[in-house]
Amino acid sequence: MRQARTCWPVLVKKAQDAVNDAQNEIAQAMARVDQLQASHERLCRLYDEYRLQEQTAQVPVMGMQASMNQRQFMAQLLNLQQRVVLDLSRARDHVAIVRKKRALAEIELHKMKSMEAQDAKAVALEQQRHEQKLMDELGVRQFNLSLQR
Image (cartoon, rainbow, N blue to C red; front, top):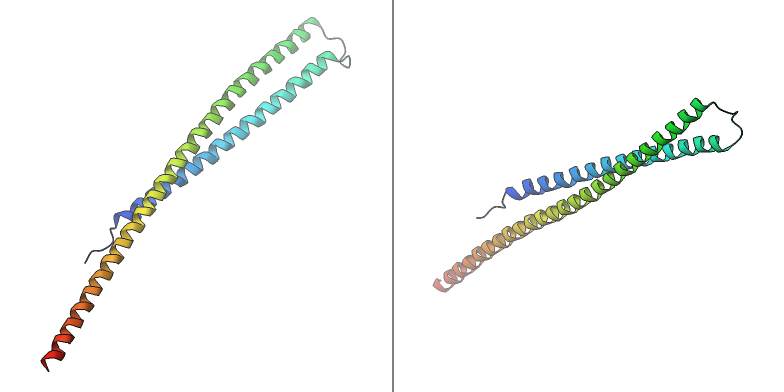
């Protein structure tokens, strides 16, 4: 009598672990995107504040050195913004890649569950056929015994 293969539950668990790992990786990548987005917004606000200070007459007249320092700082802020935008783009690309990876892992999980179900169905069908064969043999024996009496 055939038994269900023990490999399918192991393969289903392995596929489920791959899906869970991909889901965790997506969560980490999304957290990174959120962090970079927040950094970008902070840098933009800081740059806008310094630009506004430079344009308004609220600040007393600065010396030449202070003015150059402020402009240099603003240039550094712009460079940081560009780096953050580039990192943000890379992080979003990484999220897209990991989502594709999760989709493939989910397909694999579905395939493994399907194979497990097919195997269980085949075992049940074989069991049913075996039991039917035994019932048929028992019926034939009983019929033969009734004829002999």
